[in-house]
Image 1 (tube, rainbow, N blue to C red):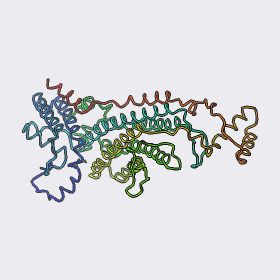
Image 2 (tube, helix red, strand yellow):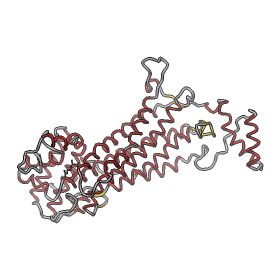
Image 3 (cartoon, rainbow, N blue to C red):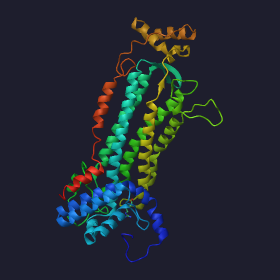
Length: 446
Ligand code: ARG
């Protein structure tokens, strides 16, 4: 069944090619397509386009489709193009003429826009929860190991004294900024495109504010033509936020791979969490972090992929846009899997305690020694010279590191301040699930 069938028999190869992977990809959207349709029929009754009885019948039918979907028995049939067509077909078969009224005043173009926005809103919130767990774990490791020193590197050369507290805490604060980007993408996403129809509005007197409230959007996407232009644009904002999180995961994974090498041995994991080699009996490999690094790096290509997909597209709906769904949905899944496995690993990380006692790292204390002389009144440049002579002549040995007091240094990590900012940012991620929304809509029938 093609919704746009007009007595011509479509060539099957054309249908297959144009449906592409949608029969599978669109299953991500099913429950949101139903919830969006519920809001739409409530609104159609509110503006007098359908009767109250028709609204109630349609809500009940949509609710039963929701239940089928939860049971896994709602599928997109072979001769149906996408989830929107499938739901419309089901509505017609349950309710006959009344069911067919579901498409009054809408197009699949605004339907897919609203479905994607509702789905990605939920995915963003799930991702924020995972980022919250990772942030919390990193901060607790930072607190736990705040006194365990670590050489800090610049140019990959031992540079200054750092600590596990500073290192873990750095990635926590990194995630806090990633979360700010994600909340911005969420704010751009949380606007209602429903009612813009094919991209040019409709002569039917829709109440777009009502569907916005019902679907708990912050506001409307006002201009109908902008609503269709926004497809690709909002995905780009989301992709940039995902890429930012991915960059954090990737760089952290790189540090872990490096710190696990035989040369560094700063950290380790129990044998059950690392991998071996089929030929070299001694191998203890950090495959998990290599795969997080690789997969996160692929996620970082997403903004580029979206730019390529949407560059030079004219305004209005273009079928190219269909291809955005899969790449964006996959990236959410990839990212969630990476964070989940990273959490498992971080729950088992082992930290080496006496790294800084290795004479190899003696010179990382040289800047502290310069500062000690500076505090005695010696001009910085003279102190620097004196200490560099000591370092050259190998007569240098470590000094104390008790003087780090300023904000963000190893002696004053400010983890509480960072957590306060993070928790403030977490407040933006808080919408209802599709099931809760569907229940709310069913309140109209009672
Ligand atoms: N599968 C389509 C998509 O994701 C749905 C919209 C179809 N609209 C159209 N005019 N062919 O873009």
